[in-house]
Structure formats: structure tokens, C-alpha cells
Image (cartoon, rainbow, N blue to C red; front, side, top):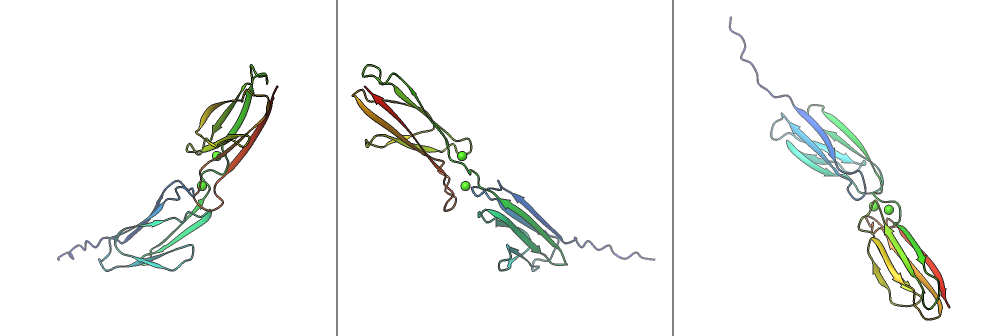
Amino acid sequence: MLLAAPVFAAAAELKLDWTGGGTDRNPGVWTIQLTGVEAEARGSYTVDGGPPRTFGPGVADVAVPATLGVHRIEVTGPAGLSLADTRTIVDDDPTPPDLTIEYAGKGTRLEPGVWMITLFDPESPQATGTYRVNDGPIHPLAPGTTVVAVPYFPGTYTITVTATNNDRDSSNDEDVVTRTDTREVK
Ligand SMILES: [Ca+2]
Ligand SMILES: [Ca+2]
């Protein structure tokens, strides 16, 4: 008795993976992988209930939407295969930089003093700022500590410091903080 020739038909397989940061800065990518099917086999996927899109054998990358909130992909392959995945996208930096102004001095013409501005944002190292004294020129400010001399002429001086996390993945994403300090020099 002859045995029937073995059939080496590969099993159809559908995979769905995700890599990324899960943030609006780096929402990530879903990877659909379809193997073990005929070259003309097709599947389809939808993102957030949108229009279905077709994919074939091999690998297909699908960008996760960068908008905040929950995003879901639903994948349907041939042979009744189906998979789904849900990701929640959060803001990579929901806070303005830490910004402080410290003063050291005596408020006299001999020792008008200095302002020490410290700008730091743990989530956004690219944070920047500006400062100005009264209505004077606006100076750029980098992360770290910056020392600004108080003018030595008698008068009242206000330093205004504004800092941003430069987080602009969407409208209303940026976070800005402003601080002031006023000193009198006699
Ligand atoms: Ca952001
Ligand atoms: Ca921040």
C-alpha cells in the first residue's frame, strides 16, 4: 500500500506587532505580516474605523495616528484570520520647563546684584527661552543657568523670563511659562 504523498502546504499566518514610543512625538508603527498564502492573497485593515485598506503577503507598516487618545487597528486576513491592537497615545511633554529666577545682591549702585535664571525641562531637552530687562532687548536663553547683571544705575528693574518646551506635535501642544522678578537699585 502506498502512502499518499505528503502535502507541504504552509499554514497561513497573520502577525501584528507594534513598535514606538506611544507618544504624540513618537506614536509608532504597526507591522502586519502575512505569510503562508498564495501571492494573490489579500487582507484588509482599518484604523479607528476608517476606510479599509488592502495588504498582500509580506510585511506592511501602518503608522499609528499621532493624535492623543486611543487608536485601534483591526486586521482581517484570508482564511478567517483576524487580529486587532489598541494603543493609547499620550503627550510626550505635558508640562512647561522648570524656570526659576534667583537674585543675589544688595540693590545698591556698588552691588546691584545679579539674577540667576535656571531653565530645565526633563522631558524636553530642547527647551529654550528668552529674557529681557524692563523694555530692553530680548535675549535668547538656553537650558541651564544664566547669570544676568542688574543695571547699576538707580532705578527699578524687572526681568521677564519666558520659557517653552518647544513641544509642537499638534496645536495647543506647546507649554510656556513666564516668570518675573523686580529689584530696586538705590
Ligand atoms: Ca507633544
Ligand atoms: Ca516639560
